[in-house]
Length: 365
Ligand code: SF4
Ligand code: SF4
Image (cartoon, rainbow, N blue to C red):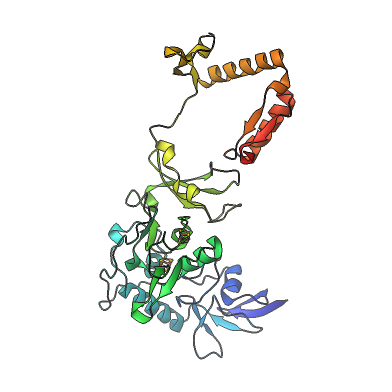
């Protein structure tokens, strides 16, 4: 059922049950938010999305207020703008002024809103260091609660996406703070180090330890890729500085996983530039020189070759094995680390090229 309402003097139609925020955004009317994220339940606690509704004495949080027939909404009235400025001022009064060295400067939602609303840091408030920076020993997640604006996105991301309920809110008033478990460390509170809370944090309160201080948003190129660890096909952006991969960030447009990643996809990228990584095919010397198998001396050494040589050797061995012992003397074992398409091709290779049904997958071992 559709509902008729007016937003900033523009008549719009929206679906019954939608919030003012949903109705406005669907009609290209921007209402700023901080605690709201489309993937998470709305909580209405940051008060940035406040709007004026005709007939209501108080401003309403657009992210949690449902639309009604004939509703009249103002999203940019002087009263609304003044309220947003005041809320931003309150956040900045309790926020360290360390944007110069903050990792997320340039992609911080608080910074952007302060800029948009021309809010200066007030002279009053407690802008100093209240908590230990880098306060948690988790090897992947850097916690600096001095930069926290208590939006609770981390709490919701952990509970609703990862199902771990690691983060919670402790204390009240000025002492209110986000804590892991009952005020313990992340790992003791059963954190899986998936980094979802980092991905949803709008400020630098939660950031990635592995690339902390290596580059900020404007210093990297983002290259979308598909995770190499398993066949689910999660996608994300590699953060590339120069010709080095320095990190990973969620790509909200990833069709399979959205912003979600597991610890391997998000933090297991150091193999890319690891000195032990094998970058070229290698064959045993006795094979390369066409001699009988020998495990002794330099005969057993690995020799680096190009792909042409490696593939020719492999194809030759497979062909001679099949002609000597039959197709069923060959078996093909594929891998969960391949894509679905690669596994499909190996199935075709086994059955149609080699001629055997001996095809299996490492997931069954
Ligand atoms: S890393 Fe994952 S499991 Fe750990 S607190 Fe963050 S969202 Fe929860
Ligand atoms: S740590 Fe980040 S996501 Fe969590 S409440 Fe603070 S600002 Fe919000």
